[in-house]
Picture 1 (tube, rainbow, N blue to C red):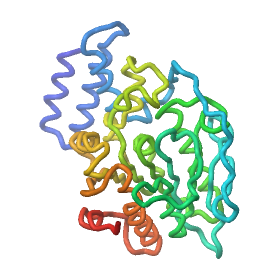
Picture 2 (picture 1 turned 135 degrees about the horizontal axis):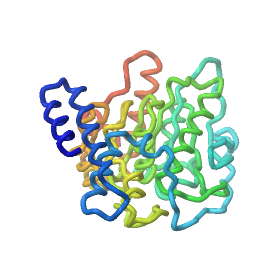
Picture 3 (picture 1 turned 90 degrees about the vertical axis):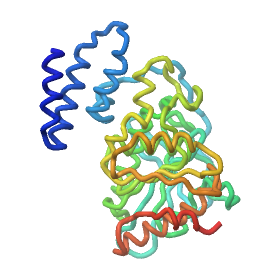
Length: 334
């Protein structure tokens, strides 16, 4: 078997890029087949490489996470002010989950939309309607202020939802269900649904981008590369199980991204080391990384979400695809 693998890799040196990639994947998968379900040194790494070659969606398929903690919030989502947001419920594989959604836009036609995943306990939603300090504005209000349909979904185990928190795993399925709900609304353009999130929410949306290409663009603020970087917080499976950790860690699946993804962090303070590690690991041209000088993990949110909102509105008006220059992010109004 090893000789066959080596020959395949050697032949790949003389093939085109796509052929070399196929040969590499076959070689990795062949090596993984040699790893019997016993504790052999190096097999975890080989199996991880095999999963990465297959992609995150394939690696997740059929895998059932084993939670070592069964936690849920238990508190109902607060009622938002009338005319600002509506409290609705959408159906995910976990059951009916609460979400906030901007009211139906005035006038006809279909509008761009964004799903926003908050930081901290991303599974629960709360007050995102009060005006926030621009140095720490986690409300993503820039999107709804720009007329973009905005949905803040809670996730399994959050608020008084069914299920348990899974920490960067089953929550991906909830996000895709939220996208299904949005796409079914007659005022939403199903081809212009975006996804964004901050901190733990940034990690979650980056994982979602590695599973599906249904989002027109994904905006990840301050994610980590490895789920274990949170030191066990927000992680409800066995941290000593390499498969559980790997399937929740976006740095291993960057090659799976198949739609535009933009990753942001404040250069002054935040998960800058994680952004650097993700950028160094990526060779995927669909992934874009930005460190914004003078901004922190929190102060980056208000100015950059405002820039993103303008780009989404402009793209819908035919002014070109969403993209960013480092210069415009650096000079975004404070």
